[in-house]
Length: 170
Picture 1 (cartoon, one colour):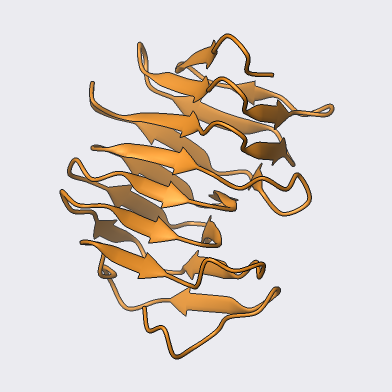
Picture 2 (cartoon, one colour):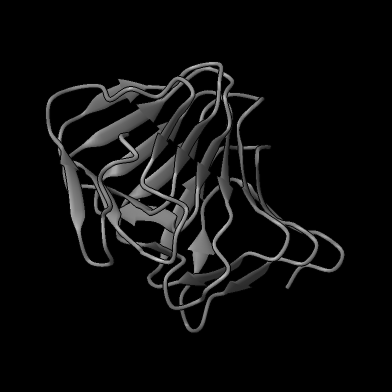
């Protein structure tokens, strides 16, 4: 959270002590470095104000990260891991523009658990699906916005959530 510390590409910020601060908080600097924010303990986080992670959000195996309340969560370099994410409030916004560093990956599951929750790949984002990934949430949406690109390669994005490809998305 501090601006006096720079996390470089390949570095990992390991969170393993319960819930992490998420009200109006920015993790990492908005520079051309690609760190990982790794969650290693089941946590309940979220606020009604925005959280920004200029990196990749990774949830360890056997762990569930529950994200609550209405604030948007901008995660520049995508999300995944072998643990699960349960989004009970707000929106996950993926904003990265480099297929090599912006990804959805791992064997975990993302569950959208509330009528106000969804995932959006923002305009100009370029995201690689690096493994088969499940997004559940009947009637809720995983959206590739206009100008965004989701490169699935041979991988499959599946689950009960609606997949929306907006006009101009690819």
